[in-house]
Image 1: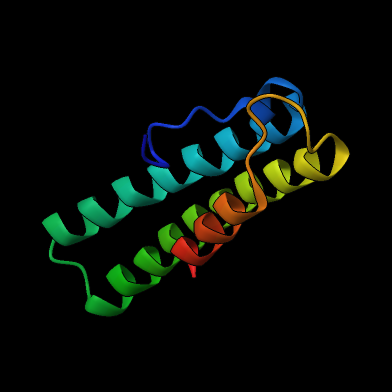
Image 2 (image 1 turned 30 degrees about the horizontal axis):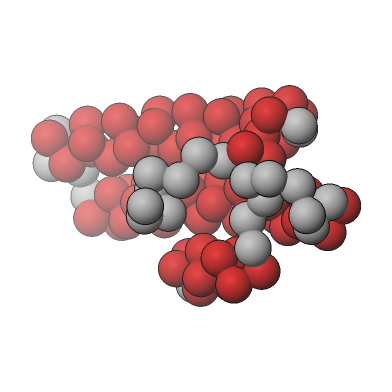
Length: 97
């Protein structure tokens, strides 16, 4: 099972973290829509790149929040079923770097 297919069981325990990730992803979705609109309307490359940078940062922050939530759960109860292992966390972290 790939990381994309692995359920993030940690969010079942941390509703606040889930809310924050969803908010960041919705923000990125809106920013991506703005990038698409800017490209379609032949906006200046500076504006397009600024919007792309904002999308990228929002996605990165959402990813790091997912990983930090998993890390917190791993430290709290390392023997719990479905908790991401330290090796998996390292791979996930490095995939965002």
